[in-house]
Structures are given as C-alpha cells and as structure tokens.
Length: 173
Image (tube, rainbow, N blue to C red; front, top):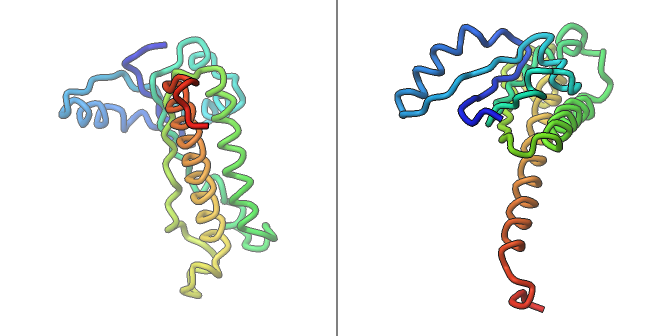
C-alpha cells in the first residue's frame, strides 16, 4: 500500500480536478498522489476487478456517488420505479456491499463516502414538495442509509478498539 496516495471514485472523469485538489492539500502541508477511478474503472473497482487498486491500494478513498447515475431512470420516467425509497435503499446497499468487499481485503484503506446532492432535477419539481418527488425520496433514503451504515461501522470499530485495550480482569462483570 502506498502511504501517500488518495483515490477518488465516481462516475465522472476526475482527472481535471486532481491538480486543483493537490494544490489545495499542499496549502495545508499535505502531499499525496491522487488516483482516479471514473467511468468504467469505477465499475471494475466495485466488482473487485481493478488491478491497480488490488495490487497497490491507496491509503484513502473518497467515493463520490452521482444521483443522475444512481437514479437516472427515475428522472427519465417517474413511473419507472414503484417504490423510490426502496430504490434508494437498494443503491445504498449495493455501494456499501461493494465497499465492504474491498475493505475486507484491504483493511488498511480508509473510506469516505460523500452524500448525493438532493437538488437533482426530478419529475416532482413543479409540485414544490420534495416528498412527492420520487427522485428526492430516493436520494434522501440513499443518503440516510449510507450515513447509518457509516455510523454502525464507526460504533463497531470504536467498541472493538475500546474493549481490546481493557484487560479481561479489569472489565466490569
């Protein structure tokens, strides 16, 4: 694993952003090489087929999910999905499962998952109530599920760390 590398993952080309991000990090005396995994490479990463990642994983990964990709069918046809909240949960479960699979093989990698912007254009925009807009409902559920999964993992990790540092003889009975 390279200690001074960061990866950005998302369904876009992140290469134009890299020089700006490196300059921004340098302003804080942080220096790292940034790898990008966009478009088809992102798909290979989630399926465990990204050779570069498997061979030499970065120290940290910033995941930038994109609502238009996750919920594009709902933008094109609001009747494409019967239960938008369930679609949001399914998208979150897929992403969390893919990250869990990679994290199980690369425990040294730190993961940060950005939430999806809920200001996507949707078929319910004219209504003025985001809860009636299926895209907003799916995005909100996706964000809630991803944040909830992150909190569960943080709680498990802190519990595991805390209990592992207390000798059994000193643990309360």
